[in-house]
Image (tube, rainbow, N blue to C red; front, side, top):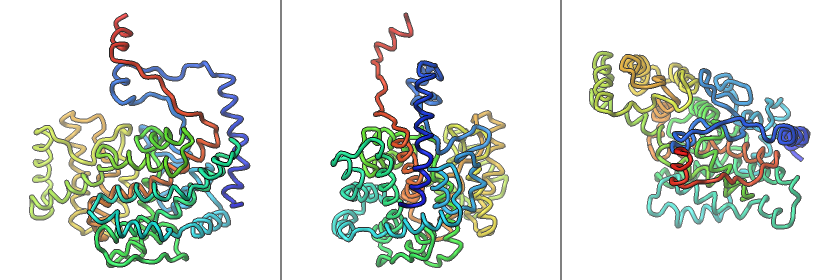
Length: 427
């Protein structure tokens, strides 16, 4: 038994008791109301989900198990995955044990590579299509599905959800790097180096020309900053809903990543860097503050938005943006793309505040991440959502394991017709 499984086995009885006590003692207590605007507006702000892995605090940003995300920027993704699941940082022995578990599970089956090479990349599909299809094909490996079909007890659900979660997370760097190299004609697949940490090995297998320790640092940072974001976003909610039917984690993660592939969820990082590149093209280089300010004012006056600015929840600068910004200052201060990112940060919030255009004029993580990827040679926009997906799989898998640990039932909210709603509000 792995040390992570041991730790969870210690914690889960108390967690279940807490859930059962809440239902028993406060089961009929009302904790949230809903109005018509929320019903017709995507349920925004309705408190109706439990997610222990993380929360987004309006004036602080992303908090993972009580730890502000900026305090985790120097941590390894493996450490953060342990934190997501247990609420604790692993000690050295626990971290090494988790890394060993992941390395043992990291080999992608040869049959999948054969399918990828002969079928999935043949007509240049979107990288997310390839990733989602690959995970669906790998579902045949699900330990959860295997043991469920043989009558495992409800109390064991979390154990085999964890097994699938570890398998998926272990495979993702090799799979995602292979998709990059096959889809964008980068040459042969690059073998894993098992002495490397999870994100560094991913960076190595991508095979970016000139990639070095700095690129590995970026991949570690990227994987940590995007790993989780509460339970109400589309990818997390889709994963939770499908998992609640006791579909195995492969199916559930496919659902989550399919949501992430949508333009309103996972495309924002592409839009952010496209805007930066458009600025550089329009001005034939880095513009003056005055020219950039006028350009921003004209864009807003035309009814368009500045990609990467504003956030559904936050009312402060996204700490994830700040973490990327500080990294960029250290590594690429003279890069024109990064200089535009810095200038936009100085100019856009002021313009938005002056014009009363946004509740939150501050940048989010998507305003900075693309420039860093471009600097290291990841210039294929379509791959950015897949990178996001590899990171977000950490949070999706952690949430799935905890859902099964807490014994959450199948999701089944009640729907109503528009006619019913009209009658209800007019009565």
